[in-house]
Image (tube, one colour):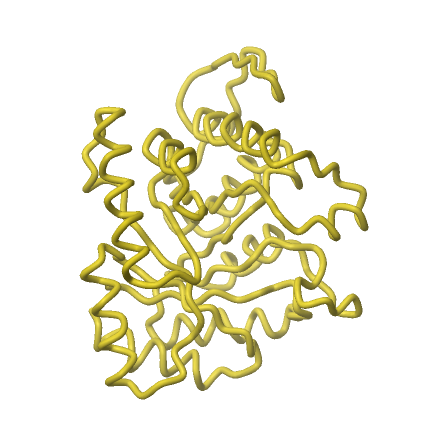
Length: 278
């Protein structure tokens, strides 16, 4: 099992703090740093600020050398798929290729949409947008022109340039529902769930296997990951807990760290917990 770090960037994380987090991750051996993609605090703290997710990822890609960087997750309501695909490609080029992971989801935090003027369609419509965006983002990274006409987006003979140096990994975030599992089997490189127990992870893993079989995909090519809070127990207890998730089919954990100024915990994750479950 691999351990990554996940930071809630909308809770007033400054650029200087992002720098410190990225450097601590890289020095401590953490493989990837993920951040949320929100414009307002999700803890009801309107005074807290949020730097743009893809702006900070591109900037961190320029000042690190091996740390993987990505979003958990970018909502389809914030950006046109052409803009989202271009942002990920830009970060890939800045980082030298092969370090970018794009997490995508349908979006859920209605207050930030109201505040910033983003439309917030009903759940079914957002899911339709997600379906089209997953396909469009992937196709923009591939060689050659393509056209697409859907309910929400239309593309005419597009051959977006430049292509990625190395195609970003595409993560679909969801709750394990049948529609999202089917989308993951069709388009994603990884499926991510959050705040669920090992028994539920086992159910989702089994659902992913069945979805892959339905579309003719090898289930081994679609790993399952989990976003969960940073463990507060002892190292031994944390390892035992993570082993349960590993047995349920989880291959990596994005540890959600809510105290972004606490770099000692980041070091502990990279230097003690990650080696213990590797």
